[in-house]
Image 1 (cartoon, rainbow, N blue to C red):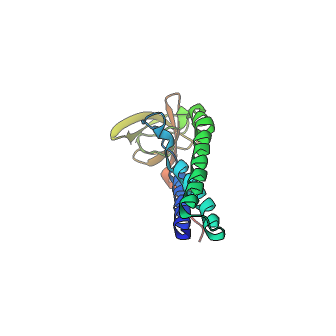
Image 2 (image 1 turned 90 degrees about the vertical axis):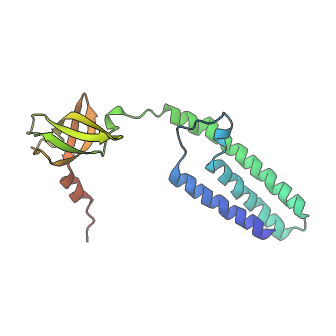
Image 3 (image 1 turned 90 degrees about the horizontal axis):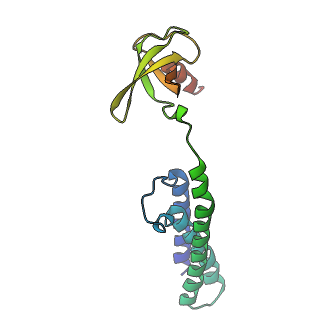
Amino acid sequence: MRVLFLSVFILGLVLGVVSMIAGIDREQRRGRWVKYFNLPTVGTAAVLFGIVGYPLAKYTSLHPGALIAIAAAAAVAGGAAMVGVIAGWAVPSAARDVPDERYVFQGHLARVTRPIDGAVNGEIAFEVEGRRQIATATSLDGTSIAVDAEVVIERLENGIAYVERWTTIAKQLELPS
């Protein structure tokens, strides 16, 4: 029995780590209650099943059915608490989080198609979901950028893309040796 509880506990920890790394899909298109049956909820239930069941199995002489029933009750309570946290805090908080439209294309690579000359706006082209987009562009630091230079979009504001040379960013990303 101890191996069962320890295995489920480890599985719960793994599910917790995976849910932290992967996150929860904001675009859940499932039924009202099914959307709460997700990695954090299952991970919480599995961890609690193991945490409660292992010491009971090790330090008591309860019947295996009783051990499983007590651990399962703790798991259900923990899962219900996690649903409460998700429904009462996480979902409403995420619904209030409105992305800033200026930064939707931040980090996109683009190519200069009309030169950017200091304060004079040029033009860039980039792809979004396989479709070519064109935008008026200006240099983030006010320098000139020639045609065909690779740039990175910092933000798109009032129809103007603020860009920086890719080579500048690449230098900033280099790790010291």
